[in-house]
Image 1 (cartoon, rainbow over the protein chains, first blue to last red):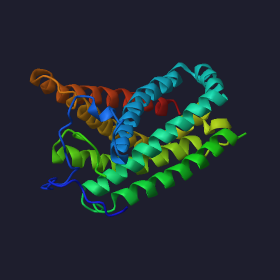
Image 2 (tube, rainbow over the protein chains, first blue to last red; image 1 turned 90 degrees about the vertical axis):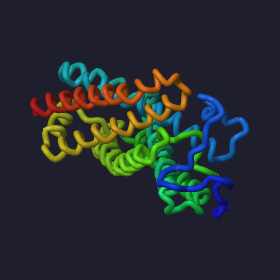
Image 3 (cartoon, rainbow over the protein chains, first blue to last red; image 1 turned 45 degrees about the vertical axis):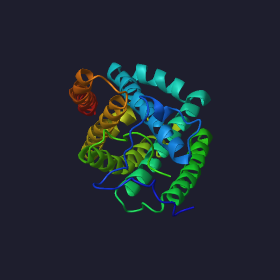
Length: 143
Length: 124
């Protein structure tokens, strides 16, 4: 499980991930026949795009601080509703998956763990799940 | 299991290294940011009041950390956007616009973010 080699013919000449030409512009999104690596790649991109969207949403929300305390406190009333806190948990899922899967890609791509990537993936995902549960309990349980 | 199909970061080793280094830095910076903003304050959701935000960002050390976080996260985001855009099989003319496009977007994003936290720090 942990020592599955990379695909034959993928010769590494430089640091970085093994690159293969995608068969179409959005092929990375099609996971119907994909293995775990393909799912991880697609989810990494989806969470990445979601986090870019969140970056701009976050800047827009923080801009409310420029309008003074009343605008910010109005946002706080919305931000502390259970539905909004649920979105915070979704954000933390995106951060954990993208960050931990990115760590795997960096370790594998740099050659530090090229023969351990499946075990690395599941270990990091397990860690991520534990952190996500802890964060969700903290966020939703704080009074 | 491979890193995944397609070009993950625009295809060039230098770009991949930039993505990896900013990503590693973000593992630390995001953790600091999330803990500081969600797991320190005891109110629901861990969010700060207006006065608490100003006091927080008015701390010079915090200001520098948040500024570095903004720059690194924007850099990483723009590298990711570039990689996704280049995977769209754009025409050569459009593909040439991707790099300057993300550079401009990144510079504008960082500039706006720095002005935002600078104004807030000035009110502290």
